[in-house]
Amino acid sequence: MAQLIKGETGDWEIVIGMEVHAQIIAQSKLFSGASCQFGAAPNSQVSTVDAAMPGMLPVLNGHCVAQAVRTGLGLNAKINHYSVFERKNYFYPDLPQGYQISQFLHPIVGEGKIEIDLPDGTVKEIGITRLHLEQDAGKSLHDQHPRKSYVDLNRSGCALMEIVSEPDLRGPEEAAAYLAKLRMILRYLETCDGNMEEGSMRADVNISVRRPGAPYGTRCEIKNVNSVKAVQAAIEYESRRQVDLIEDGKTITQETRLWDPNKGETRSMRSKEEAHDYRYFPDPDLLPLEIDDAMIDKIRDSLPELPDQKKHRFMETYGLGLYDAGVLITERARADYFETTANDRDPKMAANWVINELLGILNKNAIAITDSPISAAKLGGLIDLIADNTISGKIAKDVFAEMYETGKDAAAIVDEKGLKQVTDTGAIEKIIDEVLAENPDNVAAYKGGKDKLFGFFVGQVMKKTQGKANPAAVNDILKAKLD
Amino acid sequence: MSLDIDTVRKVARLARIGMNDEELTLYQEKLNTIMGFVEQLGEVDTDHVAPLPSPVDITLRLRDDEVSDGNYASDVLANAPEQAESFYVVPKVVE
Image (cartoon, rainbow over all chains, first blue to last red; front, side, top):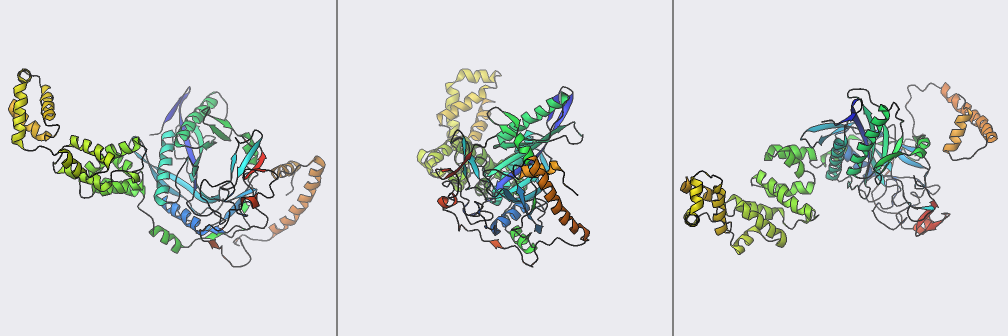
């Protein structure tokens, strides 16, 4: 549901389009053989091509092309058989060439679409305008010296995909859901690690406001939004700023603005404006990129099951709800874990254990599911013990905690600790008789109409059996005796 | 088409070339002469001719994704006017 802003003069709708820069997972750079590994010593991964020494020529990395096609297919997009690299001209110390090799009029990937899952349980389709290949710039450090900037060109020339969305997003929540889904798709495809902290996925946000149903307003582009949280905060701030300006009778200037996370505001980057005349032209060092159907088909055949396909399959085959399916498909490893756990078992029970217990404790301890002390097979073993009534659901939680600490099998823990459930109705009946005999006052009160005391009796029976009595049997027998 | 003086000033600024008014007038003339030559190409009818990226019939060569270059920070920094701890050092550029 689109979020509206209440202004002095009525409601306003936020219109957002996103430009996401995703660093391609590759060994070497887009046009040179230097490494793209993150975190190396400054300028150690710079070739003479990346440093823009005279006479150096770019040679395109075939794997990066394949990764872009793969991503395009994952975004349900049209792959262009013909695309052109162009020079985007501007001066900056971390851009030694004086231009970025990018794609402009003829990108490698055209229109596509993805589904985003919103917190209210609805699904919305978001259009993808295009995806193009381009070089990353180097990195400038401004905090090393009072009057100087330090430049590291290791990132210079690494391959990026710029993924541009249609202005289909209507608020901070939708923007966050879009980023989450895009990241998920990229990670499933293994074309980008989606790590916003290390900067391998970065977003520019185009924001405008309008009266619901009116034509688009003038937009501002917000840069430097480096986390999903920052994207949401920047949208909140910027849309409010625009509404206030318009309601004051002023107009919005189309400009690039910088998000300041410390002050929680956007401010104009005036210096960027003049530089916006990029004077694109086809790079004479590179021929047009031609891709044939055979290559596209080969990549299509190698695609994994994508998040949305998996989500729909989980709902259909396992009968899971949208929420549970959505949580389980967030990561491929998580989805695989669930499927191993659910194998030949009650899928809803497996989903509950994975989502509520396992993910709960893993998240609390910041442990990835791939490093879980409890393997999927072992969690399945625990579920088997519940399903065949060896232990109750309540005892199972204690066993689970023990499994997490020790990594032992559920069955071994149940044996060692003697946690096997008492299902022998004779034994349970005997204990119930004891409890009733010990509490004559409460029995009388219950019979006098205090129904709530039923829980008290169940509690007493469980206490005497250390929780091992089968709860269903206790309920049945107790009911028969009291009513 | 001819370039007015403001366009010449803008082009100079975009190219980071400092020019005084006298120089701007001089280069306006020179650029307009060049533009005049180039504009003659407009007389050829190219409506149904596809752009020719290269005069020879070759396709773009692709490289395998292998690390085959780099690891010579001191070489790439050799011509830098200033360096420190293997970084290029430039006047402060910050928004």
